[in-house]
Image (tube, rainbow, N blue to C red; front, side):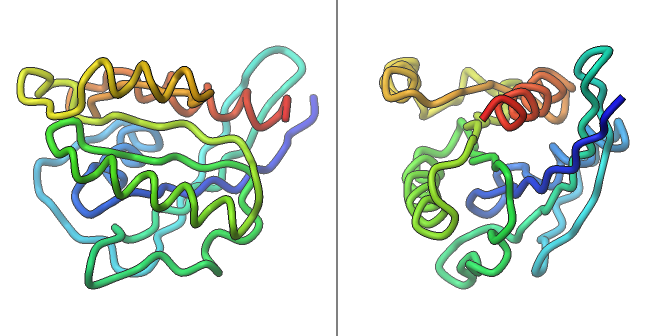
Length: 168
């Protein structure tokens, strides 16, 4: 069996749940404590897609992009795919995702990505609408709704990006 190694970056605004998603996926853990990521934190996890394909994901959890910190282009170099993570309860994080998508495309070109709409456990409070998501799907965006807290959609999101990267 061949093991492919793929670098993935977690991109998004501050407090959207990037670190929580990585912790849930890699360690099956969740914490309500918010801890700001400083710089970049790297984790990895190997997933078996089928009897012939295994992918070792090297996950770069990059600090949130906000007015105080901007994502450094050097962090993006060498990535095979990325997640744009938004908080469904904050519309401003969707605007940030569009800006980060542009940064990624100008830095590494058009590579696979998945938009994660996190905090589905708070869907009653969402500012992101079904129409917003439908419009992005029509533009070819792959979208997965997740809850790191309730472990909903997390594995699906990582497997979806892994499959997109190996067929790209």
